[in-house]
Length: 243
Image (cartoon, rainbow, N blue to C red; front, side):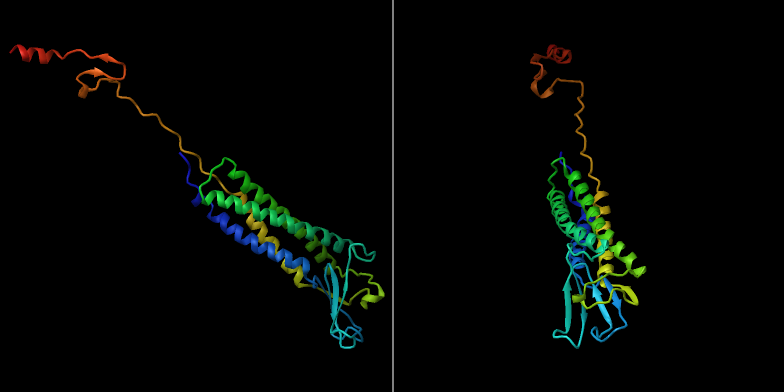
């Protein structure tokens, strides 16, 4: 007898929804320019007095340059970038394919449960998706917390002259990229916990029907049809015939 599985995966379906949203936020985090918000004293070029430093480029607004928004790309091969930005580029690009793989496995596991397809490995798919969600969150949290620490300690970056940025701001703040990365990781961790907590119901045991201990079928005239033997006559019938 097959176990009914659809009712066992409602929380995991909710976890899949959270994970999809978390992966979208993870992708958005990696592309944001404002991981760090720099405040500068010299506003002769950076007329807004504020610059945004992401993991892929640095930008600021200016009224004296040709473009209102001035940006320069940051590459992992640049010698001036700090370790936390280089690590963020690698780990964020790792988190995205791992998160996609986690969502695909999670969706397949949900399908198995909702269509009542018990192939014997459904628990493995749920556990694998949960583990990959944790891995995705880890790949996002490490650079987020590393850059957060740099902001709190007001670490400097020795930008080359073409970036038109000072090596150190007088103040730094956490940007939207870091807060979004924390939010996406929290969603992925919750999803991972939900998938790892999945419990597959046990299959009910088959019980053998208990026999009555009498193989004689009265409707067959006392013939034991199971053993192929003819039953004995009832003495009461013989007495009645003599009377």
